[in-house]
Image (cartoon, rainbow, N blue to C red; front, side, top):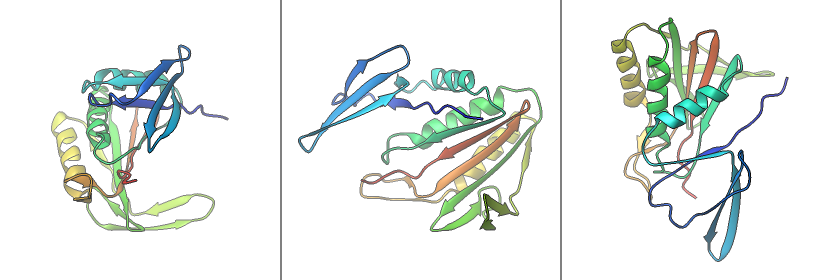
Length: 192
């Protein structure tokens, strides 16, 4: 069974160096000149501004599989964690059903539970197996706020050359709701 990969891009308001060209309903070319060389990329959809609602609606519309993966990556300081936390909150508030969540981070070749901040044991066979992850049940808005606060407080952050507060770990958040599984991965910001 094949799962299509779609690439979405959120542009900051100051991304005026980019040249955009709509190729079709599903594809937009992005090009940028850097060090006298033109770099081109193709994406399926673009968003601008700080409104997370259109992003969340598109992600939910495209998440038709039993297992869905949302991976946020890019240069440090571009708003990956801001977007992650906002779409995560929208996902958690969009259902009246019981929601089970877990979260962990990969930092310096180790794995830590973001709910307990404890080191986790892991091994790899044909797939990665992580032992001792904690789960949390979300039933009320206060549970959502407590979950998001734990993730923010326990996530490893440091100052970098490009950003005063930058996520230095990869956060993996797993949500089971309405018969589906969502894995949201907020990658550490790239510095180069």
